[in-house]
Image (cartoon, rainbow, N blue to C red; front, side, top):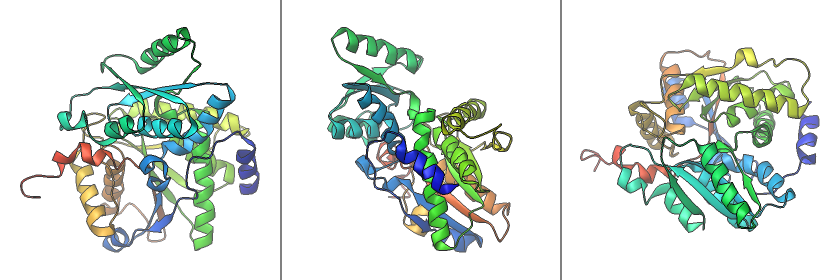
Length: 342
C-alpha cells in the first residue's frame, strides 16, 4: 500500500522546493523527563526561507499555478504568517510575482511585529504586502486584488489560507509516508502523531496519508486558533476532499477518529499562551530545539500536559511534527525577554 501511494504522488505535478525527507529525531531530554518514547519530525528543516510545513503544500499548489500559466501568486494571513513567508520564498525561486494580504491584529509586541520576524523576511524576499483590516474576509480581499492583477494584464493565481486544500494536503500525505518509512528504518512503531492545527491541511494530509498506508497511527491535532469548532470543520472538509483526490474507497475510517485537542490556544489566534511559552523554554533548554509561540509551542504544551497526566502507555511511541515558524520568535520576543530572563 505504501509503494502505491508514493507512486501516485510521484505522478502528480509537483515542483521541487524542499529538502526531504526531513529528519526524524529522538527527543532525549523530553523522553527522559517523562519516561516516554518521543520523536520529532523536523519540518522546520524543509529548507525554504528557514523552513516550515507550508513548503510541502506549495510544491503541489505552485505546480498547478505554473501549469495554468500564472505570473502572479496571491495569498495571505496574519501579519506574521509563516505561510506568507514561505510563499514569498517559493515565488522568488520560481520567478513569480507575489502579493500578500496581511491582517493586522492586536497582540503583544505589535510595534516589533510590524518590522520583524516573518514580515521582515517577506520584504527581503521581494513580496508586495498589502495590509488589510482584521474584520475583512481574506478570500474577499484576495479576490479584489486578483481583479486588479487581471485588469492590468496579469495572470493571478490565488492560494487560500494556509494552502489548506486537497492539493496542498498532498504534501502531508507525502510526509506521512516519510514518517512510516523512517520509523520502519529505526525499528519504531509510532502510535500517536501530534501536530498544530489551524487551517487544517497538515492534519488532514497526515490522516489521509496514514489511512492510505494502512498505518494505525492516531493523529492528534492541537487547535491553535482558539476556535476548535472551526478548526475541526476545516480539517474534516480538507480530509474529505483529500481522500477523494487520492481515490480512497468508501467512507473515511478517520472521520470518526478526528481528534482535536483544545484549551491550549490562549485568548486568540496570533496571541502567545503562557503554557506554550513554557513549552518553548522547556524544549529549548532540554533538547536544543526551538519552537514558535503561535503554533508549535502551543502544540507542544498539549503533548506535555498529556505526558504529565500520564495519558500514554509505556509502549507508546509519539511523533511530534515540528511545522516550523521559528522566525515568529523574534516578533514576539517580549514574551521571553523579561527582566528576570535578562
